[in-house]
Each structure stands twice: as C-alpha cells, then as structure tokens.
Image 1 (cartoon, rainbow, N blue to C red):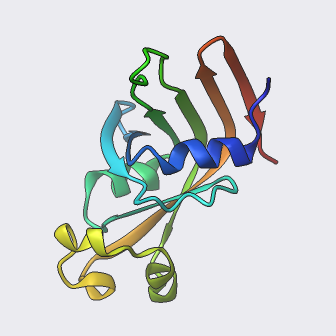
Image 2 (cartoon, rainbow, N blue to C red):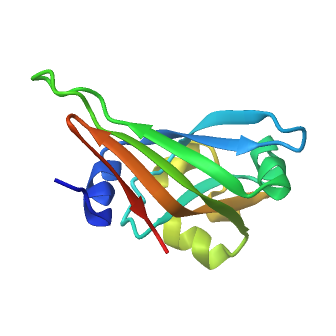
Length: 144
C-alpha cells in the first residue's frame, strides 16, 4: 500500500523532532535536531523557527537544498516505526504574520519574547521528494 501526502502528515504529527541537514560553503554536510512543533498539516512545506545569526542560516544562504529525516519509535508490540526522508529547498521568512501563524507556546523556551524575539526567522522547507520506509512498505512521493 502506498502512502499519500495526507498519510505522511499524520505520521509527522506524532514525531516532534527530526534532523535538518544543510551543506555549508566548504561542502561539509551538517545535521541538527529541529522541532516541527506539530505544525504539520502537511502540504509539502515544513516550518522551523531559529535565530537569523545561526550557522544553519548561513548554510541555507550558501545552498538552499536541504534534507529532513524523521523516525518514529517502534510500537509496544515490536513493529518498527516509520522512517521518513524529505528532500527540498529552504527559504527564509521574516514576516511577523507568518511567525504568528506558525507559533506554538512551547517555543517560548527557545524564543523568550515570542514572535517579537530579536533575530527570529522561519525556515520554510518546500519538499520536492519524500521517501518512506514503514515495515514492509516503502515508497516515494514526488511533489511538483
């Protein structure tokens, strides 16, 4: 059975943290954990808050192609969790209205002034391809 974009969205809602991989100016691939904050009414876009002066922003400015990976833990019955890999292009959003749209209260731990935090930026990752592995089922979804 092939998964749909809607199926992927449901899976991502239950996985808070994934890994964002970027490539720096010197060609080094760097990965770091990022929270999707449950913001996954998934249509091919992923959203992450961060500070403008972080290394990941410099990496995205150098090369906007990024990767996201997510893994759900095994079930209590021993079924392996799903593995999801997303390839896409990142863009940087500094629009306060978009901040409000994607804000959740848990982010206050990292950004104490909320959407008014100095240097706040949203990373938008537009997926071009999603690969998944779910037990015996695996597949790819290409997003135009």
